[in-house]
Image 1 (cartoon, rainbow, N blue to C red):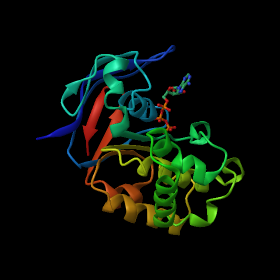
Image 2: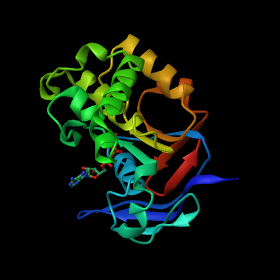
Image 3: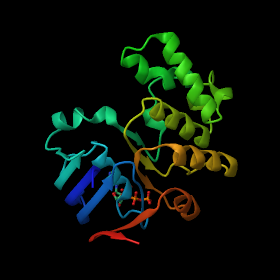
Image 4: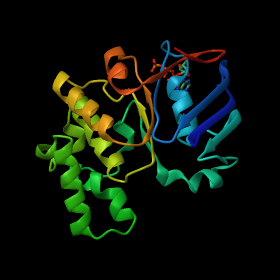
Length: 216
Ligand SMILES: Nc1ncnc2c1ncn2[C@@H]1O[C@H](COP(=O)(O)OP(=O)(O)OP(=O)(O)O)[C@@H](O)[C@H]1O
């Protein structure tokens, strides 16, 4: 199987305790998997390891079959990985919605008109074009989450890592996000406590325990 993400015997210890050990996982090309587990077991931490935001782990992370042995190595693949954190507050780079959604395209050198056009399209797709001129910090938690998702999807990463993507979304917005994520052909890991959301999106579900990942 062609794998986008491979974890081999990943273990992580924070300042206080061993969070988890022996995590093995293969996420195939365009496969969608969900990770569930008790509060505090380390789901967000595991996602951060895969997102290249933690390097003090044991074991091996591979992206597209390439062992990632250093930050430098990870950086070659960073633009292939879109990470939606559980708390999106600290991840915005611009004060206004449309500017933030355009930011990564502009950073890659795309001209302003094209980046603006693409940003408008993605906001329309996600049903939030009415928010385009709003100040991000004045939006609700749910609105901020969709704006963050727009900023990720616009760069067309090959891998999506979504930490509680439907947390704080109302029923209709959640339904729209499910439809959009279902229509996207990408490798995805979704961390969620939300059973019905997972059932509609991810055919493969793993439970994170201290001693490893169990397929359920
Ligand atoms: N910045 C931090 N500093 C110290 N400890 C932390 C930090 N972030 C997380 N932890 C601890 O690491 C453990 C795992 O946290 P993590 O957020 O990965 O769990 P989780 O499974 O995603 O939980 P939840 O389902 O509640 O979101 C917890 O005990 C938490 O208190």
